[in-house]
Length: 132
Image 1 (tube, one colour):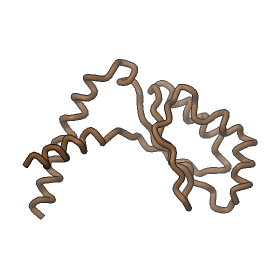
Image 2 (cartoon, helix red, strand yellow; image 1 turned 60 degrees about the horizontal axis):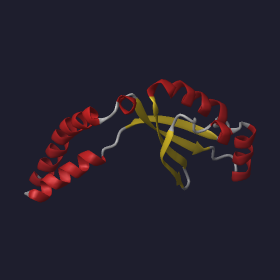
Image 3 (cartoon, one colour; image 1 turned 60 degrees about the vertical axis):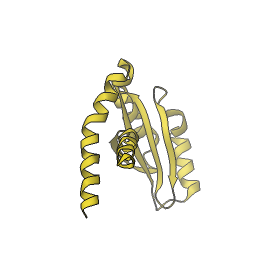
Image 4 (cartoon, one colour; image 1 turned 45 degrees about the horizontal axis):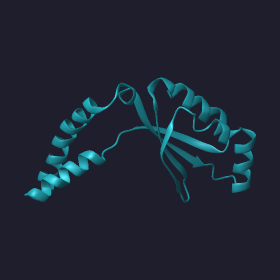
């Protein structure tokens, strides 16, 4: 229990310090970007052929993702749908939302989550724990 408490405390402390240092190293365009994770949940009342037909009718693949974004990851979660993480300029958030509304609706239920990269924090915490 004590080890768990110490580990969680270190994670919290690292989480407060590491991202600030990383933000200072980024260029202004990177600092003005955001990461968004989008859950594209398949509508369970439709089969794959129906979903693909709706996507084609809505020009989903031409609209999404927007050209100003970079795909960080794109996974299929069996029984759920697709999970896409994008990085894009903050001022393109509206364009991203419109691309989903015009391209994905009817085939997917959508959820958006602001996202950040925790991996550098985890690595720093891991290194500190290994040094003890």
